Amino acid sequence: MLKSVKSCKKSREAIARGVVVAITVIILVAIVGVYFYSTMVTPATVVTTIATSIVQTVTQPGTTIVTTVPTVATVTVTATTPTPTPKPGKTFVNLQTYDFLTDLDPAYSFSGEIIVMANVYETLLVYTGGTPEVEPALATSYEVSEDGLTWTFHLRKGVLFHDGTPFNATAVKYSIDRIRKLGVGAVFIWDPVEEIKIVDEYTVQFKLKYPAPLQRIVSSCYGAWIYSPKTAEIENLHDWFNEGHDAGTGPYMIEKVERGVEVVLKRFDKYWRGWEEHAPDRIDKVVFKIVEDTTVRVMMIEKGEAHYAAAIPAQERKRLETKPEIRTLWVPTFFAHYAFLNTQSKYLSNKLVRQALAYAFPYDDFVRLGEGAYIKPVGPIPVGMWGHFDDLFQYNFNLTKARELLAEAGYPEGGFKLKYYYISGVEATRTAGEMWKEQLAKLGIELEVRGMTWPTLWEIIKEGPEGERVYDIVAFAWWPTYITPYDFLYNMWHTEEKPFWNAAYYSNPEFDRLIDEAFRLEGPDPEAALKLYRRAQEILIEDCPAVFIDNLRNPLVLRSNVMGIVVNPAYGYDTFFFWYMWIAD
Image (cartoon, rainbow, N blue to C red; front, side, top):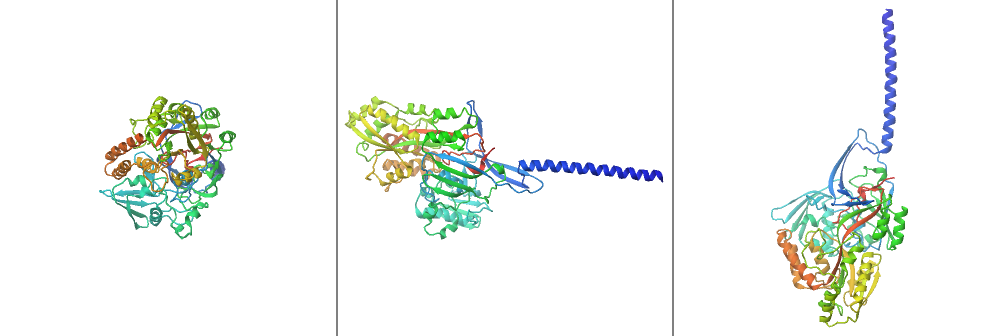
């Protein structure tokens, strides 16, 4: 009996000790759990599709090269208990060099506002240039009929527009039919489309007039944005958009527009991809500031008052790269600068004079100034893009040849003056103009180099060759609407009844015929299309309605604590996709 009592007592003591140990373990686990909860976010089960870039580090200090466009990866994060997601609280300040806004209506938009639109709106697919060349966005998959004339897209469910309207097939049809009806912006991309049919709420079908690479067209960075069909109820919708309203599905909404000063974006809480990854450091706001003065941009990025500064000159860039808090990402682009020669002006209506000017541009000296940022162009299509040919004829700097051509044209001593206009704040085209001016002076030609805001310059172009503010040469850049040489050749040099982008006022019926036919062959016979595109480019180079200044290899100067950077040359040359990014403390 005594043994039994003692045994029970020992058992109770053992149990007590076990309980104490168990409570201690539970407390320790709780403390550890609180610590990890405070440092990271672990939602119950989150499957997020994110874009990634292959990044190669090179030996120069503070320099990184992004060698490919984004690909797609799926990341799965699992936890046992749902936890609330901390709200992003970081603001990204982006310094731009000029007033890049022309039109915020997604149907009309066709210029520098791409850096805003790509974060506010989305397309059915996204072009990546990989294998496959497009990835899902608002459409999750698609099928094509054997004859290439019927394309069926299956749409993503659970997506909301910023006004709370659910995304569906009605929105797709409404958005694309609106631009086709208006005939504005990049409407040319929809030429192959005969009809858009709603099959059901989340299925839409495109009927084509002729086979075309619709997978690229629906991923276009202009003219293919999808927006809320509820906007059809808004009176004066074009004005409404340009007052700073939006109706996209993207991760950000427009909060403020002060033209010529700044544009502010704010996070859309109900974005379909979610905000869980790196949540506390995610970007809550984006502020685009227009700072034309290079010295001020350099000062702001150096002091940490901005996270990105566009167009930093080579010498300043190299100095900044020595600082650990600043880095440079070298990214490929499909971006090129052109100097368009007014083929209707008094002197440049003569092809020989235009060719003389092409021989008078100091290509190699200009490229050296960029210290890796500029590539000497061969032809009008940027290097690396489908439709570019490395073996096309290219004018080289040759003042002797230029003099011979001027003499043949009747101007052996030059003796005339030309006006060269560029976008204020764009250092590349300003420098190109000044270098050209120096060489033309040796031929007896005076070049007036004048900068102005982009909206003003574009209005002058659209006034036409008879306008009161007519120029001889105008310089600006082009990047693809979607990946096709037709975009470059059609927009900049196809005959226009009313001037829009054809700043050279160039017209050649044979050139027009070749590129129009090539465009129709891209779907059924891309090799035949390339042959026609090549012949068209040979004609263009001979006629010389433009001097090809450069192709850009873009050095992005950023603060070192900016992480998750994603760029894609199919969507402009310094367009950041802010949803993927975060700012580390």
